[in-house]
Amino acid sequence: MDRGHILQGRYQIEEEVGRGSFGVVYRALDQRTGEAVAVKVLLPWASQDAELRHRLKREAELAGRLHSPHAVRTEGLTDDGQHAFVVMEFLDGHELARFVAGGPLAPNQVEQIARQTLDVLGEAHALGVVHRDIKPHNLFICRAATGGLLVKVFDFGIAKIVGGQEGGVMETTKLTVSGGVLGTPAYMSPEQCRGDELTPASDLYSLGIVLYEALTGHVPFEDPNPVRMMMMHLEKPVPPLPAPVAAMPLGRAVMRALEKDLNKRFQTASEFFAALDAKEAPPPASSPAPALGDREPAPAATAGKQAADTVRRPWKWALVAAVLVAIVVVTVAVIARLM
Image 1 (cartoon, helix red, strand yellow):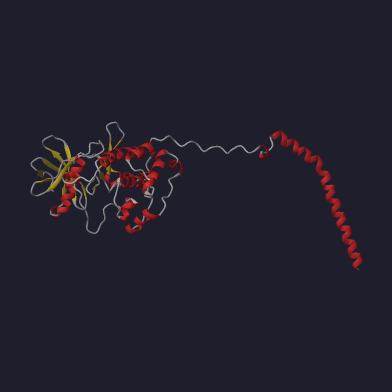
Image 2: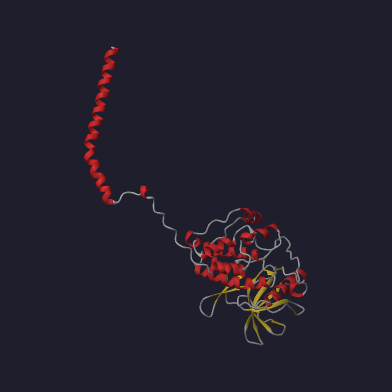
């Protein structure tokens, strides 16, 4: 789409800012408000695909139901006869993936990312929505007005409704992509890899992978073969975090989020929050005092024992010499008798 093109007589295209398999995101000027907005437009061939159009519509409607400051403000799907598109707030920042590519982040930054992502996931889960694709590419890091980090969670296009409501935004559909899977293998929960029914705990596992990567600079399981990677989620133990991080509430929370047993994992975002709020682990207890009979003597007692040994030592050597002489005498006598 060329610069200057106007969608629906309102949104003037300024520049392309992102491109995916099915669509393009442009920065545009809302001529009615004078504000910059992001416009996500399906590619021409994708606009003809009813399933992809439905996916984009779901993404817009689900995001529109979320009021968390960490959800992307999104309007519903618009079709002007030539293009199917949604209008979103324009985010000035970068995907978390770009930051993580530069190496591990500071634990306090990772904790901010965790808390803000949990805020929107908690709201989505309360509505019966499981995101199913939490990964660094779907977490956008902006600079907050206060100077800190502001996380925005987007791409609810493959979200799963588990609340049981039918129709409208709560319609449950089986979304498939030719040649692909729902989710991203490096961040998929064990139950997602098995194709089981998903719960909020699946999103929390995926968030655990994201946080693990942010703390270490790499995901816990890596393999160029996506099937082998999914098997790792099912069977391989999670490598431990670096010791200083592992001892923090953040580190302990991340490892619990990565439990393969669904029942040992966090079930809700609020449980995850509570673990982050836990007090620091107490320092390791000192070794118990040995029993009185097992203790080493105090320095003064040791000096006295050394002095007594020095006095007795000449008698010890005299005894040893006498024994050796006796052995020699007996040996000589035996030899003489044999001759």
